Image (cartoon, rainbow, N blue to C red; front, side):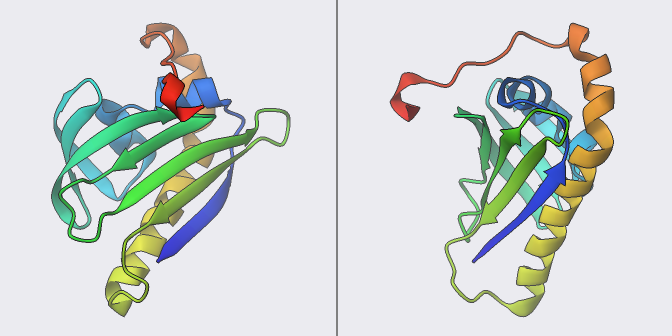
Length: 144
């Protein structure tokens, strides 16, 4: 199953990579209630489905998060489409089941909506706080 949304947010790929880190996930998505631990590109979160390990990966024009212990192999990406005046970010989420339980499918749609809303409401604030954040990450060469 897949779900996606387009968020109206003027952030570039490098800005997404800089602003959205494991430790800031609850600031961006209401479905992620707490970061229980984090170290670099790995951590543990509490979200609408429970407690999960999370991995963060810098990809071209954005970032990917995976829940490696999730029985449904849930992953989501945030990709900058255009950082200009009508910038958009694609929120894409998928699992390894074609036809999940209807309640679970609805919760995935809710998760994607929460990301869209968080990006649309938080991008300007993130830019204002940018001077206090670590330097930008780099996409590793094996990703293009």
